[in-house]
Amino acid sequence: MKHHPKPCLIGLDWGTSSFRGWLLDKEGRIMETVRADLGILKISDEGFSDVYHNQLNPWIEDHGKLPVIASGMIGSRQGWLEAPYVACPSGPEELAEQLAYVPAEGMDQPPLLAIVPGMNHWNDGVPDVMRGEETQVFGAMDEEGQREIYILPGTHSKWVVTQEGRIEDFVTFMSGELFSVLKEHSILGRLMKGDEDHQESFDRGCSQALESPFGLLSQLFSARTMGLFQQVEEEGIHSFLSGLILGSELKEAFSRFSSRKEKEFPSLKLIGEGRLVESYQRAFQLAGHDCEMVSGTPTTVGLMKMARFASII
Amino acid sequence: MKHHPKPCLIGLDWGTSSFRGWLLDKEGRIMETVRADLGILKISDEGFSDVYHNQLNPWIEDHGKLPVIASGMIGSRQGWLEAPYVACPSGPEELAEQLAYVPAEGMDQPPLLAIVPGMNHWNDGVPDVMRGEETQVFGAMDEEGQREIYILPGTHSKWVVTQEGRIEDFVTFMSGELFSVLKEHSILGRLMKGDEDHQESFDRGCSQALESPFGLLSQLFSARTMGLFQQVEEEGIHSFLSGLILGSELKEAFSRFSSRKEKEFPSLKLIGEGRLVESYQRAFQLAGHDCEMVSGTPTTVGLMKMARFASII
Image (cartoon, rainbow over all chains, first blue to last red; front, side):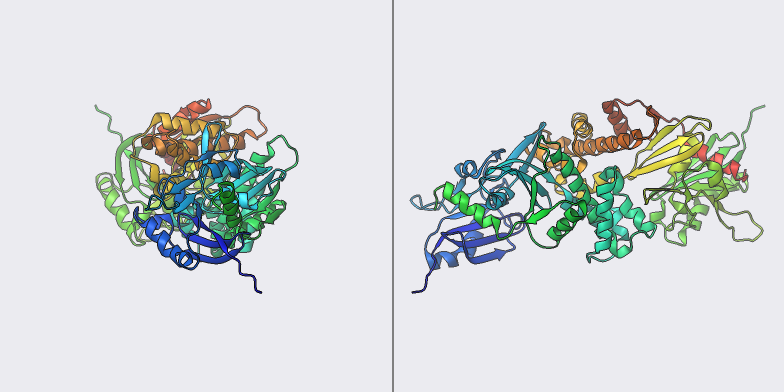
């Protein structure tokens, strides 16, 4: 007799620009997937419920009511329901206690959706925040593990420090957005040609940033002068700038995290996919740091973990 | 009998966004001034000669032919005639030898215009450039003087190191342009309200950058989170960001120039006017560094100096 797995949870990653859903069995295996360009910035206030029902009804018709849990910007002030930030350090249990529940229309119905809170962290009087990345890290990390750093590239890339199942520290680098506004709107973009990756120019920018004793603010202008003096060809200037910014991110992060008491640098793990993550892999290689890729879909593992701690499955 | 000074030179500062002219007597005193929004970006290729004649004919009709000298982006590839870069270190004599002359239409006429070259400087294989700032610095500096650093705020602010009448080193910081692209085009601009200077928020951003052991890339995001957590009010976020960037510029520059052999930090002199320069003055005050303002119009003094070395007056 063939084994028919049964779904036990719908997990969502509902962010600024996209909506992703997974139908999960009780082992956390992915049975089906849905994806739509329906991030919170594309939805007006009343539209969250419509998107939810349109996207999930086919699964609910097939399998009946299921608990649904989401992470990401859907829990922000601009989202469906604000899920307050939980202070760092925290583990998944603490976040599971603070899930925000979107109520069903009927009073006796279970809630439509549980939303995972974001995390905040104060460092010398300066706050930092994340929403969504904490769930990926909880999914990727070993609960008993030693100190590790997870790197999540993106518009606002995050470096997240974990130890023994908890997130202890994190920091946001505006690298992705900085690259894109400088490319689109500054004088640096005027000499650029094309959009193809140009490995040699990326390496040159990244190595320059890693090796230079100078900071980013004085190096940015070199993305112009290296073009003016034919040191980097026009087709490579965007890659040179990307390398310069990623190299600066790594240098800042290494100096930040190596100032900790432990002498040994924690092991580094990259979460993500696509071109941007490949650029980070190359940057780590140039910096001479090993950096392991996290396999699978850490978001679904994190959502399962959180749903269990909250006893909604 | 009343003394009637006679003009001996027309000096121009012809940059990216504006055209400024001065009618100068033989002591370098300003007799008359003209200013127009006719920077090189606003003029098509054939238009330079028209702008020149339209702006300067009234003076030439009153006083006859006069030598004319210009500094700034008019000597760039996008300008009227490219004046090649002179390598740093150099003094005004070396630049005067390399003036580029725009010829008059008649072969037996003196040239219409002498253009001051820009300077370039290679540092660890990375080039830097300036056009126009060198003339201001030559005008401001003492020819016998000890090492000094001139700071010229702007879209691309310059720190220029001089000694005994020569420019020895310089570096460009993209601070002004970085602030404006982040304010206009990034997520940081979304929480900002208004455009009024907000001293307290500027001070907070600037002090944070000066005191933090962390770099700019990880601090930029705080211009968002400080707003989200009501640490800086909406009306002050643009000033906080400006402070953060200027504080980072000062910190990078201090670390760059204090790594020199001399133990004593060179004296600092600011060239410029308006709100931006006031922000720099405040930033130096917060950093605990004395910074003197250069008085007068250093551009006209520099142009006179260059014209004399080139024997065109």
